[in-house]
Each structure stands twice: as structure tokens, then as C-alpha cells.
Amino acid sequence: MHGTAKPAIEVLFSSETIAQRIHEMAGAIMAAGLVRPLVVPILTGSFVFSADLLRALQAAGMEPEVDFLTLSSYRRGTKSSGSVTILRDMDLDVSDRDVLLIDDILDTGRTLAFAKDLIAARGARRLLTCVLLSKPVKRSVSIEPDFIAFECPPVFVVGYGMDLANRYRELPYVGRVMAG
Ligand code: IMP
Ligand code: MG
Image 1 (cartoon, rainbow, N blue to C red):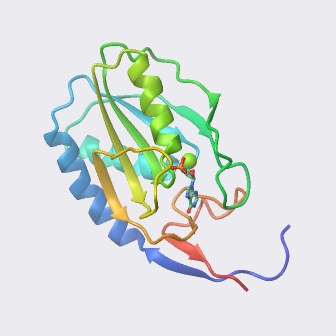
Image 2: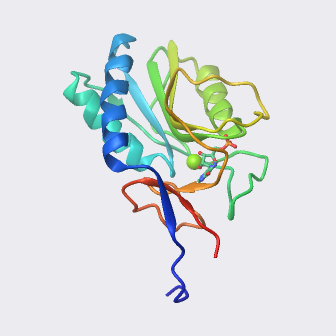
């Protein structure tokens, strides 16, 4: 069990707001015309967003294959460790495939850039990237996602799959943990 003090969470993006935006985003992704798409959520943080986006894409007519790539850059706490490692690799071959990479949040850019370089090096035919949130910070690496759901304030956020030391992933909204 955790301590008795329960930190307050300020809602930044409600579940209704997120659902509406994902619906729009699915339309934009469909318009890109991916052929035999392979959707690759970057775990763990994107699992809730990816599940909702996949179902929105299905409703819009997509019949993708799905495979997962588990990367780690944030170990604990709120600071990036600076290096990205593969915790669990994909099972499927991406060569000659149209791939849609999904991540939860673009911060320094290292995670998405790492995944993009990896999949490009393995010979993907087309590679599009999609993130739920983009923080307005100076990137460590230059990367511009093809699809961004929301610009996010430069604070540490949790919920909707995203964690602080493995907590808060279950929240249906994106919020900020208030100190105190
Ligand atoms: P980047 O490699 O610095 O762009 O960080 C991307 C990864 O760090 C994301 O996939 C998240 O898992 C994690 N991350 C960055 N900012 C936050 C945050 O505010 N809350 C939770 N996770 C974050
Ligand atoms: Mg992540």
C-alpha cells in the first residue's frame, strides 16, 4: 500500500476531450492512405491511447496488423535517463510495410526518434508517427511527428496510460500531479 496522503490530480485533458480528438485523428490517419498497415504502439505508456486509437481506426475502416515495441528511457521519477533501450522487440518483420508508430508523449524526442530510426533501418516502406501529447520543450533530437493529438503544457503528466513510478496509468484522463 502507498501512504495515506492522496495527491490531487488536476485534469488537463478529459476523457471526452481525448475521445473527440482521437475520432478526428483517425480520420486524418485514414486520409494518409496506408497500405496493409502495421500499427506499432510503443509500450508501455501508449497502451491506453493505442487501444482507443486502434478502435477509432477500425471504425474508420482500417484493418491493420498490430505489433508492439517496448522501449524504456524513463526509469523512475520524472527525468529522462538520456538513453533509450529495447526492453522487448517486435515479432513482425517491418520490411516493405507501411508502419504507424504510436507513442504517448513527445518530450526530448529521443524515444520516438530511436523507434523511427530502428524501423526505418529495418526497411519499412512508409513510416508515419503519431503521439497523444507533444511538450513545447527544446528537443534533444529533431523530430516532428506526423500526427499530434494535443500540445501539452511543460509539466509532468500522468494518466491515460502514463505513469509516475508505475502509478496513475489507470486514470481515464490526462492530468498533472499537484505537489503537496
Ligand atoms: P522522450 O524520449 O524524452 O521524448 O520521452 C518520451 C517518453 O518519456 C514517453 O514515451 C513517456 O513514456 C515518457 N514521458 C515523457 N514525459 C512524460 C510525462 O510528462 N509523463 C509521463 N511520461 C513521460
Ligand atoms: Mg513511453
